[in-house]
Length: 251
Ligand code: BGC
Image (cartoon, rainbow, N blue to C red):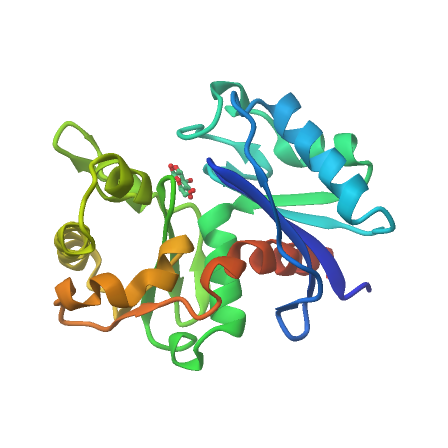
């Protein structure tokens, strides 16, 4: 079985891709980034992906793994919050496999990023009881792991807050739109994490997504009875996780 697999991380703002060595969890190529088209319909997104593959990986053959920002059950999107509503109820695995002419395996973007972190990140998070992995980007993605085993499709960014979903208050987009300082944003994150603590009593929270690189800018505001650490794969986790997920499905 091929151990060098193309992974694609589809986000509300960017589409990232690269080939991962699934034994080491390291990217073998650059992590290429393309803007998510607007509107982000199945047709427009798959056009961007097709031409990106042609341009960057013309010789690639094999399965493709894909992280997508929605609830994904048996390949089908059961939500569409930061993408076009036309994804709702679409079988993404069938759709992309047909469009890209190979087997494409799709799961929630935060779940696959968390999967990469559990497999290749800090060793302590593998058997640490309940770990909540959060990605902070256009939305808030979440992944639950209990002693290294994933419970898929948690949607902790969609807890209810102030008559809206919580991610609209604490995503990176909210930070930018409201011109929050890192300290102000860190305080919001801390309140949110306290809420998660009341609901789930995690042993540790891992913060991933683009914001993990800026962890020291807001870490002074974090004060919780469990460790909160930045993801060690930083923003590569989405692509690496997508590749590893595809490998896992073909084993
Ligand atoms: C979606 C999640 C996704 C997260 C991060 C949320 O709006 O509902 O499924 O994981 O954004 O992309």
